[in-house]
Length: 351
Image 1: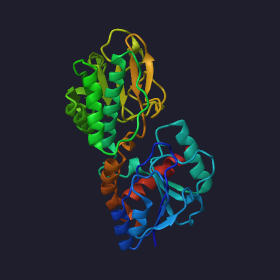
Image 2: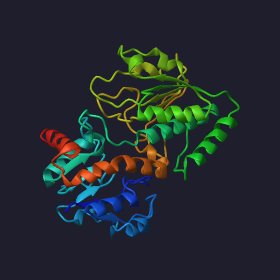
Image 3: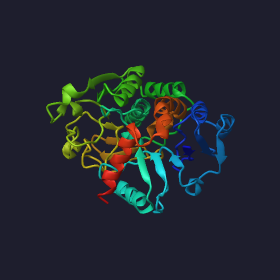
Image 4: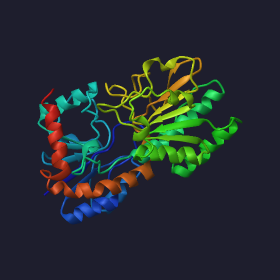
C-alpha cells in the first residue's frame, strides 16, 4: 500500500502545500495511506486534512517515517547534511549544476533514497504536468513594479509579504503606483506565452502597464537583445537551460539604458545557463531587490518562492494539476514517476 507523507515546510515565508484536503480524500479512497504533518503556517489548516481522513503527525517528524513512506513537500529540506533514505517528492534544484544541488544529491546517494523532482514530472512529450508558473509570474511582476515604485523616490524596495488573495495585492499595488504621480513604466516579458509569462503579462496589464510580449520567435536569433535595455522593467520567464540565450549580459550595468528593474522569475542565478549575467544570488522577502548598478539604478528581483505571496490561489491551482499524477504513485516504475526517478539516478552517478 502506498503511503504518502506530506511534510511541513521548514523554509520561512513558505505557506503553500501541494495537495488539498479534497485531494487527500481522493487518494485515501484509492487505497493510499496519507499522513500530513502539523504546520502552523500552512495556508490550509491541519484540521481540514484530518477531516479528510489523513493521519496527523508532528511537524518535522518525516525523518522517522516508515521506510516505505514517500515524503512530499515543495521547497528545500533543512541543510543539515544527513543522509536521506526515503523517496522524496520536492523541488530539488539539483540537476543544473547548482552547488547546493550537488550536496542534496550526495545526501540521497549516501542514504539510498530517491528524489522525484517536481520540476521534472513530465508527460511522454516532455511537457511538465504541474507547475506554479502562472502565480510565480504574477507575483514576480508585482514585486518588480514595487521595486520601480521605490526607485521613483530614490529608494530601494523594502520587505514584501503574503496576501490573503490576489485582490488585496492588486489594490495595494495600484495605490503604490498611483502615489508616484508618474506614468506607468514600460515592461518587456520574455517567455510571454508560457505559464510564467502569462501570469506576469496579466498582472502588468491589470496595472495599466504597456507590455512588450516576446517568445521563441523574437529570441530565436540568439542575441544580442538591445531592446531589453530600452524598457523600464524586464521580466524573465525563461528557464536556465543549455542553449538559452543571454538576455542581459554582464556589461549591461552601464548608464546607456532605460532598464532599472529586472524581475528574474525563473531565478536560477547559480546555473551556468542563466540568461541574466548581472547578478549571482537570489534575493529574499526581507530584501527583495539586489542593486547591481547605481546610475541609473538597476535592481534585480530573484525570489525563488514567489507563488507563496499568494499561497491559497497558487496551492489550489498547483494541487489540481498535480493530483492526477499523485494518483499514479501506486505504480512508481511507470510514467512520469519512472522518468523522474531515472533522471535522479543519472545525476546521482555524477556526485
